[in-house]
Length: 347
Image (cartoon, rainbow, N blue to C red; front, top):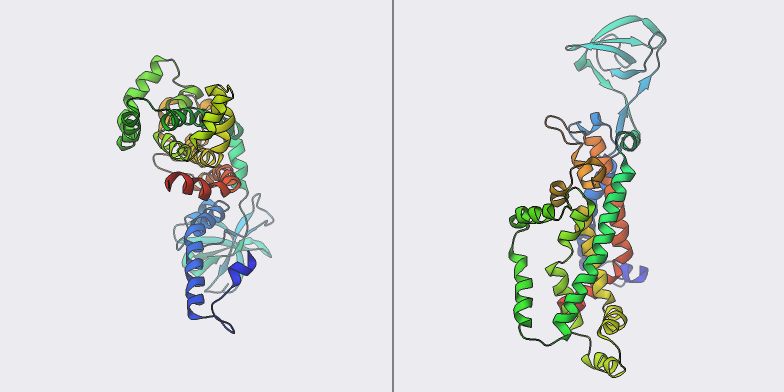
């Protein structure tokens, strides 16, 4: 990998095309990972730092100092003008445009300083309390369990149902096969919001409202999954299936022992897509779930947004925790993406 990344067109020095290629690659890395890096760093910022303008990359916090005679630590400022210019003072209180401060060596003497003549003394520090507050404010592990259960079970059901449908549409010749496939692909043109009301009525009549199964079952079959798996299964030679039938293998055994193992790359691609869809789904769980103990992580994120105020520090911290599992799954299965998509979409 290292020789491949460091090879150049120039022999003694870098060619101008090498500089252009490296610049293009660095720009791509910055555009892809820059927002994620900013999100992770911002999750360790205090609410005050998040409101700072202009925004700063690193998380800064104001220096606090314990002053004799005061129960709580006081914020430290550096005076920029006046008799105390250049000195660090602790602010007792602020009244309008005037700040009442004391020197640490003379805590009994209160001096008035205009707020324009002082600036806060800051240093880089991680506000880990943003993450600690999550476990105190919410039952994070319950939300994590709900999201994991919905994602895992829904993905397994999706792989089974879609692979069965794809097996029938690719390896069985029956009247109306093309029409059925056209209808399945045609459902991709229907916006999901159009079917929300009838879907809600059906789920309600089956008694699955406010249950995790009410979130899992409605999206078990996906037209995208059927199409991807069918395109891949078309590349599997029919002679393999005929040989298995001559050996008295049942259709279920052919599906389970031959079709599924040979379709592993396509199944891995569909698994990645299904996990991402289910883990990040917000609209349908918002409609189908009512009690907080059934909420997913995405619904828990919504609770940090109020009508007049938003707890950005906690929201960003929980967003990072929500992203970690999906990034881990993507990193583990990413080697199947190129193979699976090339095999399903290019045939």
